[in-house]
Image (cartoon, rainbow, N blue to C red; front, side):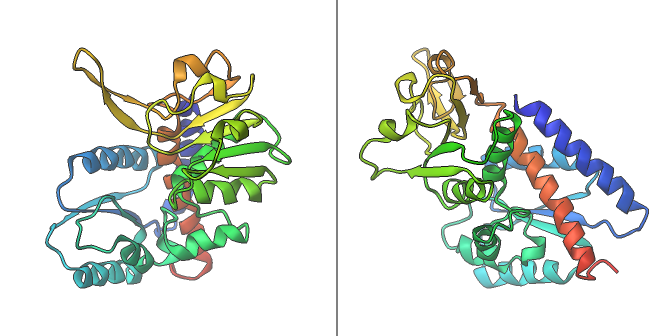
Length: 286
């Protein structure tokens, strides 16, 4: 379900990047991993594959787990000043001694292709959504794919993280949707979700949402990624939604894996395209 959306977005970005290559001012994406983290390697491979399909040079950098906060910020500052760097991606998690938010703030907003600089997130409040956090933007893209009109759409967002829940709510409001945000202090999540046209879930709890929480025919966007072990000892990836059961009730549901994830990578590449456009307007690519 997410793959056709991913393919369409990447094709749009590839067409744009093919045009700018003739100008000789393309730039590259720099993906930074601090310390050797196996799960991050998977993300970086997916991003590298997406960049190749979009025609964007991709530079993977592995920084020592012992790097200091000051040295990391200095390296990022150098990338901000380097016209050959189109965008900077900071992989998570980072070592305990690194202040992630401080490093995200160090990435210039025009090179913040992940949309995680506080300035980038703040822009969403003013409906400047072109460089939004990728997973949140991917969820909105998938809702748009259903063909439902955004204006007046009743959406319940389950989860209010800074990375997904909160920015997704603001992105949806910018589209004209009516958004209710539920979290761990919400007294009855089901009371809210059962009336929603669209339910978006991002909490990190396997099979939290069952069929009794969904209105018949509703759209369900499952952002959760959880590893569980079956009775036979086999591990598998599941979402926050009991997909098989909810599929009997919902009108449209994203699978895990294969739903939001592929679109998230495509949004990252689309953000890189937007970053290129804005840097060109700013005169950084001359």
